[in-house]
Amino acid sequence: MKAFKLVLLVLIITFPININNEFKVSSSNGVSNYSVNQSITYQVKINFSLIHQSGPVGNYSFKFSRFNDRQPNSILTQFSGPYQESELQYSNITGSDNKPFIYRDRFNNTYDIFNASYLSPSDTIKLNQQYEITLNEVSFNDINPSEIGKYDTSNEMFSLYCNNSEVYYEKDDFNLNATSFTIVNPSDNPVVKAQKICDWVVDHLIYDDNLPNQEMGAKWAYDNQLGDCSEYSSLMITLLRCQGIPARKVTGFVITNDPSIVPHVGQEWSFYTKSNGQTYLLGHAWVEYYVPNIGWIACDPTWDETENYFNHIDYFHLNLNIGAWFSIPELPDESEFPHPCIVYIESSTFDYEYTLNLKVISINLDITEIIIIVVIVSIVGIVIVVVTLLIRSNRKKRKQSEQFSNY
Image (cartoon, rainbow, N blue to C red; front, side):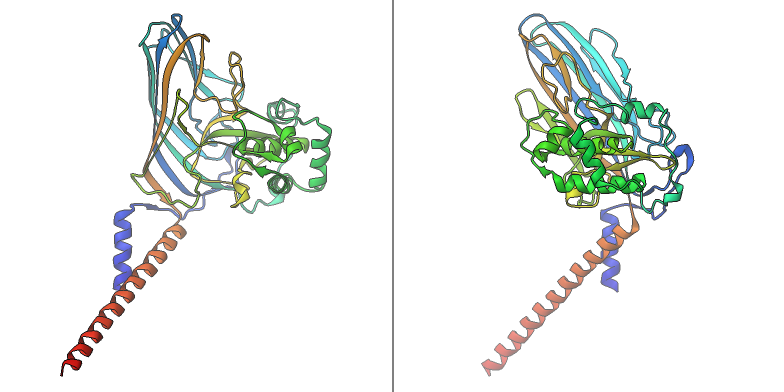
C-alpha cells in the first residue's frame, strides 16, 4: 500500500491534472445528448514570413484561415457541440501595404486577407498569431430515437450542405445515389443511417497516403475504391446527402496521428512547411452530419478504420475550415488544403516559412484514464520491487553459499 501511495504521489506531481468525471449535456440551441469527458488546452503560435527574392516588383496576396471557435452558443457555429473553444490572443501583420481584411465566407469560416505590393529584393512580409485553444473530446452516445426531431428542408443549412450536387460531392451521380439506398433501410433514423454509411465507406475504400495533394472527390473515390482522409470524408458526406442528411467536411490538422498518446502539461509539438518543399504538417479532414434536436455530430471515417471514431472526436483534431475546401481562383491547381494561400506574379521568386507550434497548458482527463495510468504504473512499480527483492535474495544466498564452501 505504501508503494501504491508513493507511485500515485509521483504521478500527481509529474502530471498535474484536473480530475473531471462530469457528464455534460446541453439542450440549448438545438444541441443535446453529447458528453465531454476530457479536454486539453493548448497555446498555439503561428509564424509566417515571406522574403521577396527577385523578379518584377513583388506583388503578393495572402489568405490565412483562422482557427474556428466551435461552441453551441456561438451564432457562427450554430448547432455545434463544443469541439473547439478558440480565443485569438493577438494577430500582427508587418510588411502589408493595407490593413488586413477579415473575411467571412458563406460557411462562416474566418480569414485574414492582406496584400504586399512593390516589394524589392529582401523585403519581407510577416504574420504572427497566438491562440488559446481548448479541444474537447466530444461523444454522442445513446441517442434516443424519440428525441430526434424533423428536418426543416427550407432551412439554409440544406442549400449549403445537402440539396445540391457539387464538384467533389456528386449527389446526382446514379451509382452513388443507388448505392446509398442499398446501404440503409428507409425506416432507419439519421443516426443509424450515418453509422451504416460510415461502416460501408471504411469497408469500401483502401487508404492510400501516396495520392496527389489534390481534391479527387466522392465519385473518384467510389470508382477507384481508394482514398486518403479527403476521399473518405467526401464519399461519406455525399452518401449522407443522398439520404437527405445535411453533411459537411471539416478540415485542419491533427496534432498527432497516434490517438493513444496521453498529453501532459508542458508537452510541445512543432510543424512547418517551407518554400523549398520541406513539410511536416499533419493536414486532415473529417465529417460532421446534422440531426435535428441533436446537432452537428463529428465522425472521422479515416480513423474509424482502427478505432471507434463514429459520433466521436478527440482532443487532437484542430479545426481550420468547415463546409468545403477553400479555394483561390488565381491558383492554377486546386489543392485540397492550400494553407497558407499565396497568390503571386509567376515570374517572381521568393522564400517562405510557415510554422505552427503547440504547447499543452492544461489538461482535464476522465478519472478512468487516471485510474488506468495509476494501475499500470503501480503494477510496474510492484514488479520492480519484487524483482529487486528477488535479486537481493539471490545475492544473499550466493554469499551464504560461498561462505559455507570456504569452511
